[in-house]
Structures are given as C-alpha cells and as structure tokens.
Figure 1 (cartoon, rainbow, N blue to C red):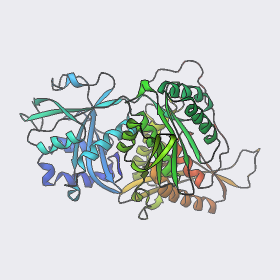
Figure 2 (spheres, one colour):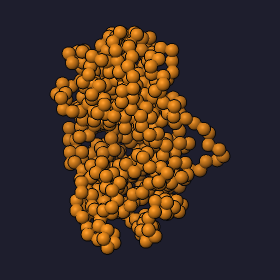
Figure 3 (tube, one colour):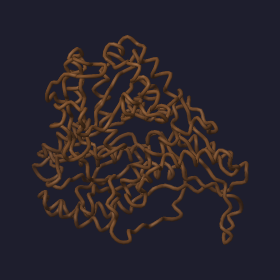
Figure 4 (tube, rainbow, N blue to C red):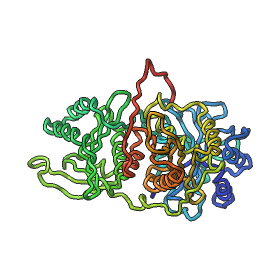
Length: 509
C-alpha cells in the first residue's frame, strides 16, 4: 500500500467540497462557512487573510496509488493567549509542535483500517520531507467521537489531558488532548567517503566487535566503494559519523545484500538504523531489485527483533556460520510488486498556467530535501516559491523552452523543463544541447515510470528541433534520480565541488 501526500491545490477543490457534503464528515468535522472559506483561501494561494482562522492552516491531500481519499490540515502551535491553557505544558521544548486535523472523505475507503496507518505515514512525511524540526504532534478529538480517539491511540498518540472548547464550532464540548512525540532527527544520510573509515572502525570497536569482524567490515567497504553493484552510506550529524550501512546489489537474483549495519552505542533509539535501512531499500527499488536480505548472528536478539519490526521475515538458519557454535540467521524482505507497477493512465502534455501551482509545490518539496544535504549552497530564498512561479510563467512564452507535465486522475505526478542551448563557442558537439534542470516527480518510486515517460517525450520533441545531446543537472545526494539516469544510459560528465568560505551563517532550516 503506497500512501503519499501533497499540498492541496485548486485541482482538488471540487473533490474537497464534495467530501464536506457527506454525512459522515458533517458529523464530526468543522463544516462552518468560516472553515470552508479558509480552505478555499488556501487553495487560492492565500490571496486573502482568513479572519476567523488566521490563515495558519496548511491543507494536504492523501492518496493511495493514484486515488485521493483523505484531507489533513496542519498548523504550527506556539504559546498564544487564544490557545487552550491545557495545551501549553505539552508544547515541544526541543523543536516544533504541529496540530493535525484529519478526515477520510472517500466512503469506499472507510472501514478498511486506513486511519491509523495514514496518520503514521503523515507524521513521517512531515518529518522527512517538510520540516525535520517537528518533533511533537497534537490532535484533539471530541468526547462525542470515541472511535477517533481509538484510531489516534493506534497511530501512536497518547491522551495527556481533557479540556473544554470555549469558542468555535465545538464550543462547550469536551475534548481529549492527545500528543505524539518523535525523537528529533538531527542527522542526514551521506554516501561514504574515505575520511569516514576511521570513525566507522571506532564505532565497531565501541560496539565490541571482535578484531576479525572489524577487519572484515573494512575490507568489505573498500571493495564495495569500487564496485558498480556496491553502496556504502553513513548517517552524520555535523562532521560526526553516527552509523553506517553497506550493501551489494546482486543482478543475478535482483536482491540487495546488506554486509553491515551498525549505529554508535551513544546514538541508538533515535531511528538511525531504520533510516539507513529505509534508504538502502529505496536505492534497491530504484535499481530494479525485488528485495533486500541480511544475515545476523543467532545470539543478536536485538538485531533480530529490529529486522522483524522492519517487516523482514526469517528465511533460514545457517549452522556455525559465524564460528563454531554460533549460527547465522538470514532475514529477507521482498518488495510488493504493486509499488513498482507503471502508471499507463498518465498523460504527458504541455504545461499550462493552471499547472504552475502544483509544479512549484513539487519543486519546493525537492528544495527542502536538497537544503538538508547542503544547507548553504541550496538554502531556500525567502520568496523562493513566488519567484519560481513567476519564472515558470515567463518560460511558457519562451521559444527555446519545452515544458511538459505528467497527469493522471486529476493529479500532477511530475514535470520536466528543457532548454535548447548552443554550446559555448569553444565546443562543437554538432548541434543543440537539451539542458534539463527542473525535473521532478511526486514520489521517488515514479522515476522509472513517470520520470521515464516525461524524459522520452521531451527527448523526442527536442530531437525534432535539432538537439543532439541531453544534459541533466542532478544533486549528488539525490540517489533515486542518479540511479534512474544511470539506467537510462546517462554518464557522469562533470562535478561541482562546494566549500564554505568563512563561518556558515546560522540559519534556521
């Protein structure tokens, strides 16, 4: 089941207001004219200030595969006079606090146990793709909706107190204040570089690995970083290595084998191992592999429980695999094939002005991820979205630009912009170059389907206009996109190296 989220746009307006008319929504959702006006205002890019709601809410659409089914709303919660006094003690002291409102609009998705998985997926989405500083979520179901309270508990929320609403749609109705706290993720995933080797050895020694196993990990890393089928990644905070994972992607059986996954003892229980593992699983998917397997000592009960919690199944036991009397246990996770299926219904068409809001939203999502990888080089400008929106509008009238979009079931799944350029005068490739900088898909798993369709259509149009080669810009950390380009036979031609000059300005990200 592939659940993904996007900011609600004008293209969702009819669907949202259709949901608001349904009886199961009217029973518990604030259906006031003020709330409807705030939703409409948001969909129209907040052109007007919402007096009743303060224009503080962001609205999101949740979809399974290609079908929208739910609406969520978020706002940052900070101490304020109008805030219920019962909330203040539970606001985050280490990061941001977000409130969440949630409803399933499509009736055929009710009664299928989707509410809790959706909320769990949404909190992860906010954390990893929107704002990593959010570590506390608040939700406040009414006493008249006990089923919602049960759902939120299953999603990891805990009831901390009760309070009465003193105003708005739910005035004088008792509510439960429920919170969900997350460990603050202050690390990012990088590809291994040689300077990381000594910290990795130090981690292995601190964990208590025997010398022969430490040496085996070193040899394996040295081999995999030179192997086209190998990858090594580290989790870092500032310049400190917190953990690592190394993997070999076998072509013969299309399975990726984890050679080692270790986190520093001082940084465990922060989700680092799960993040490294999830990263490798995504890389494996992008390479076209069908699953991941790993072996661990039979007496590593913590590791075995970890892999089971990550949906790995015990495959087989290898007697005396590590040493005499110490068995190895193999765990396997096969990817569900429906997550990899193509989307034949997607239509590739020229961009129109109405598409620009969705394009900017996709770009903004990418910029936030890039900013985490290199906070100075890719630091977002204050009015980045407004500037890009105006730029896209100008490009629509440029003869040397081709703008295409992928759409399915009224959803924008990706876009690509190509510029036909002549090479600098010192070079003569034999014709025009198709330069592609803005190239986004809604979900990383769509590169092999939607990304490929967009690229092929653009390539065909550019070739008819005299282009003889393609140049695509891609961030070094953008593993999914890089693997896609490699599969499409693109070769690395140039690299950019960035170095800070002086002290990095302390910016809040």
